[in-house]
Image: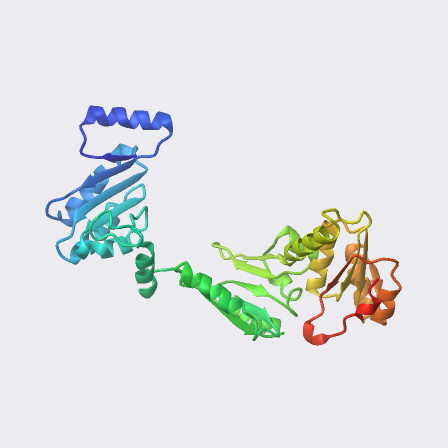
Length: 345
């Protein structure tokens, strides 16, 4: 509720009391449509807009007759040292910068509207563009870590998203299989987060300050986020994508009902294979097999997810299974080594 601070005291008290009973927040406001007051005058008006502590937001609106007035209302608001958030605007073409500097409940227009609701009003896109060009927006660096990554569409996807949302962030690639190289980028003050791919999904896990439940269970990560307090948070969302795709396939193939004794095979033993095993267990797989050319790796993965380890000749291993409903290959496409189609049961 926008409540003018210049209202008479008795009606003001009644309105404040009624708003409090209804749980309605109050914006204490002062509109000066004449000449712009001095900085001290604006400061005094804003303090009055606190309504003796009853207002949730204090608002001053004046009319700018010169560009300096946009900075005047901004400086006056800072000098007021208000106990609540504030809105400090100078209307008109000369006051547009005040809308760029204001950070609370800034009134905006939109290109589809026939006209702006107030003189000098800007759209969100216009305000964001100026803030970005002046370096006012938070700017963090995000990366894709791993190899091979040079053909990844991730930078194009994320940078398009940042641009569309008016963010100052960037998304790039750190192509490496070395943990030390990845950590150089992660430890930069500008680091905001990243995507982790092979072969670093397991190697970077010990360097996170906090693991999600999924990352802990799976023992591999694909996402890093720098929290506001500086902690490095790690998560694994691979398993969600794998589970959703497999569930959709099962619904389509089996008429909406998964086999009672769901049998699945995972190829590989890296971080993605671990996520696939977790996804299959969440789907209720009754029998889970894991295959890797290295017997020790297959056994380690099998032990982690109560799966039967397989190694040796892949075609022979697949051909020896009594049944198989799902096969999840977590082997890089460039590596080859998939089973012969004719041998799939």
